[in-house]
Every structure is written in structure tokens, then in C-alpha cells.
Image 1 (spheres, rainbow, N blue to C red):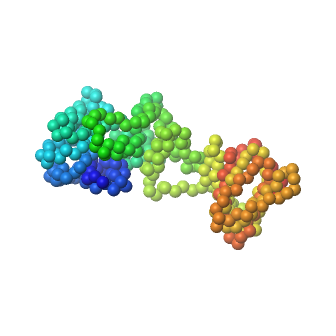
Image 2: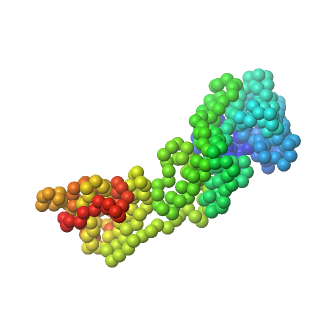
Image 3: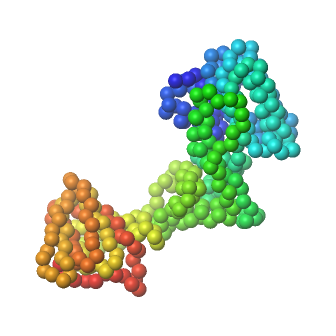
Length: 367
């Protein structure tokens, strides 16, 4: 366990870093905008590692770039030096430090000050030049297109896109946190670091994915997870839901036998549904040529019966919510499921393909 000082603790990266540090049982002290330099002076006395994330990237005037990025870093270095504290330091910098703009120049000045501090005090310094970061807890309508679009689309608001083909290089926050945590041993030499992997994605691709995520709650489709980026983007997207909209309704088809409700479906992975059978009801009495299924009774008591369509032998499997067990429904076997209990029987069903009304692959024949 280390005594770790995190500046910029209430920012996007700060929140994500601290949430993980807590799980690792580190002793954490924090510094943010509401704190004074006197507070920082006290924190610099006993810290054993500094994760310096505080900075400015959207100021009201140009001078604030240098105040928030260089001046604060300079003050941090002076306080550590006055306390003879050789704590290793991680700096949150930017790829723009290589560019000729005020934000980039202020970040480069902060980098240079830390390198000077490192040489003078033999303190390891890790300078991370971050790319476009995205993930949970990033502020929308600030400086991240991902955060803004996730918020707007999940809240039914319009987004603005000027050039769908424009590509941006994106880095996921969990990869950033992992890279930072790896440096806590303080053994590496002062150097520059970039977090990998990154994803070069067009604005049009991002928009289309986010719209598909929104639509998946309407058509019950699986959210696209075909790439690492899509998986991370979906995790980011759902973190922006309004707390009143975590749930969404499903479409239930009911009759006097019970009900059938689709939960999730995919053109390539099939569909998951929940089937409710009333006491004494038998459902099924059909077989499939190619489509196959898995049944899982999670409540109630029943029996699943099978018969190869070319013989008369009937095979039975007793099923119960008291003993969770998946039953495969092979092709070429007519089958049914009967509720033998006094309560509704609830069955989770996976089917290998979606229902195609023009080619249902459902052949009716009693067991």
C-alpha cells in the first residue's frame, strides 16, 4: 500500500483512477479546484507517489492554459523539493504538447518542468501524452465528442456532424487507468509514454454505432460487440442513461396458455426469450430441421418430452426451477414441454435463429 496524491481528482481521468486505487487498498489523498495551495503544501509532505492529472484544456482566456498547466506543475515541484520528497510523479499530458498552440505549449512547459525536477531530485517521472480519451464519467458538451454524443443520443437529443468521414484516434479510459497503475512500482526511468491500444474511427462509424445501441432497446437486438471499440463504446454509452430510463419494456404475446416474450435477438446469434406456461398446459408439439434450441426452466415443475420423428420411443426429462439444468432441443426430434406444477412454469429459451415467417422451420407433430 502506498500513500498516493492525486491532483485533478474530480476530473474524468481522476475519478476513474481513484475508483481503481480504492480497490487496491492504497491510501489516497486528493487535490482539486476547491483546494488551496496551502492544502497542496500539506499533501506534499508525506505522499509517496503523485498522480498529477490536474490541468486546463477549455479555459475562458488563453492565460489560463499556462496557469492551470504549467504554474500548478511548477508549484507542485517546488513543494516536493522543499519537503525533500522524491516521490515518483505521473503527469497527464497530451499529444498536443508537440503542437504549436497554447494548450500544447502549456503542456510542454509542464513536461519540461517535471524533467528538470526529476534530474534535480532523482525522482522518476512518467509523462503520458494522452490521445482522445473516452469512457464513463467524462463530461458531455465539454471537450469529448464521445461523451457529448453518448449523452445526446441516450437522451433523445440531436447531434451535429460536419464530416462523417473524419477520423479520430481514440483511447479507452480503462486502458489509461491500467497503464497508470502499472507505473506505481516507481522503478522505471523518466520517460514519455503513450497508452495502447488506440482505435482510429470515423465520426460516421461512431454515430452509426451509437444509433444502433439506441435502437437495440426498441427492436430487442444484441448491441453490437463485434470489435473491441464497439464493446468499449457500448459500455460508455449506457453510462450516460438518465437514471429514470435504465429499464425498457418488452413485447409480450399472451393467451390462455401463458405468454412468450423476446428478450434479445441477433441475426447471427439467434434469440433469447422467456416462456411462461400455466399449470397443466403443454406447449410445443413440433420439430425443427435446422433450428435448435436450449430450454432452462427457472421456476416451476415440468417435463420435456422428445421423440425422433422416425420412431415411437418417447424420452422424458424432468425439469425444475429447484435444479437449474439446460436441456438441448436437437433437430429431428418432435418435442413438447408440460407444466406439472401448481404455479406458472417459467422457461428461458435460446433459439439458434430468428423466426422467419416465410421459412419458419417449425413442423407440427405431436410427441
